[in-house]
Each structure stands twice: as C-alpha cells, then as structure tokens.
Image 1 (spheres, one colour):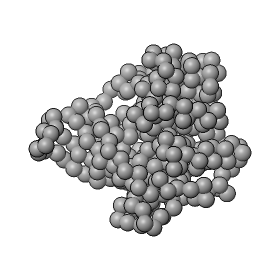
Image 2 (cartoon, rainbow, N blue to C red; image 1 turned 180 degrees about the vertical axis):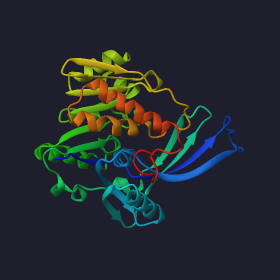
Image 3 (cartoon, rainbow, N blue to C red; image 1 turned 90 degrees about the vertical axis):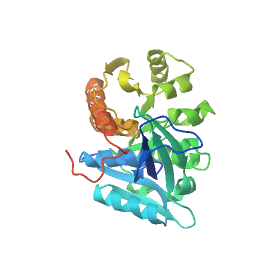
Length: 299
C-alpha cells in the first residue's frame, strides 16, 4: 500500500517583491512583484504532488479571490484538498521582500488559517501507513494549537507516522517550550539551525542535533548553504548543500521536507534522504516563489 501524505498548516497567497538594491526607507525602491500560492504546509504538499506523491492539504481559506486562486492551483498540481472555506475571513496572505542576495523577509497575515478547528480535520481519512506532516505555525498560533495537537494524536492512533517543522525561529523564540508537547509524540523533526538552537538553548548545531535526538526518534537540522545533518537511532549523517544560483529562498525548507519525507517513510538511510532533500531545496531557491507552479512532474 502506497503511503499518502497529509499536510496540515498554513495556506497562504504570497505577494513577492524582488528588489535588486537596498530598500530606500520612506521612499521608492524598484521591484519585480508577483503573486503565487504559498504557506509552508501548502508548499510541501505542492512539491510532493509535483514529484508524483499522493498529497492532501488540510487547512482553511476564505471565500474570496485569493481562496479561488489557491483551489485552482491545488487542482492544477494534483494536490487533494481538505480545505475549509470560512465565510467572513480572508485567505491568509504574506508580503515577501526578497533582497539582492535572494534572502527573504516575510510579513504574514494568517487570515482564515487562525480559524481552523478540530472539526475541520479529515480524521476519517487517516489510516495506518500514511504520514502527517505538521507546520509549526499551527502550534505557534494559540488559536489553532489544539487543532495541531489533536491531529498528531489522531494520526498516531490511526497508525500513521508524524513529522513537524517548527516553521519560524522568531515567533518560536517567544516561547520555546510551546512545541514540547508535540516533540513527545512525533517521529521526525525537521528544523533549521536557528530553530534547533532555540529549542535546545545550544548554539552548536551538532550538539543541538544530539540533544534533540534524545527526544525525537529522527531529527534533521538544516544549515542553509552549509548543508544539513541528521540523526536516527544513534546514527548521524550529513550532506552538503547543492550548489545553485539563489534567486529566492522562500519555501526552501518546505521543498526540503518534500524531498526528505518519501525516502524516509520507505526506510532509506539518512544519507539518501538528506541527498534527495538537498536536491529538492536547491530547485526551490533557483526560482521565484515557494512552490513548483503547475508544471508536470520532472520539469
């Protein structure tokens, strides 16, 4: 039986401004502006489907033009939709400023994402052998924290494997312990080095990895251009980043997760999982936007 991937978390529309020079505060700065679907969970779902995996996105959108854009894109890239359409709430949106180095700064408005409820979870669809990947934004937002934890517990009861991406270092730093309950019940943690440091209080990535590996069966720490490291059952692995011209780092971690999850759920060794994840992240940063667009797999 082929595993299905359920992705729970934020569903957004990104308004991306690519700037080629330092921003002129209180004046004008030339930019190239584009609009595309985004949101961490949605990005991972779209990359998984792009690679031929069975992906279902769980989340919430508004009954508005941005919501219609999201639904049309999910259909085009063959992501199954388990989205609640909420009247009176706008679809989440994010202003993204990408500087001359390709580094992004995000200004998110969660919109309908903050109104997701336990009743919106497609629990009846969960089955043994499937996988639930949770975006940390769901747990960082007090309004949806119970939804995220309920999904993790229900997935475990159904015999699924589970993973968590902490999502963002800045909001996590306000309350690092907020993810502690989730770390007790997940099978896989995929964090970047800043998030790993916040979760452990340890600045050295290797030591932070070892600390987290004492709490979660498989742990991955992403280190950007320095590559990634992982540990499972006492075995540590690492891989270099794939050389690429960076255009836009938005969604690099989401694409990394989409590359890591399929081989990991098949039980492949960590080196292979990290290698595929690095290739997936590289293709994401080489283009504008966080997802693959509506191109067919392999393009």
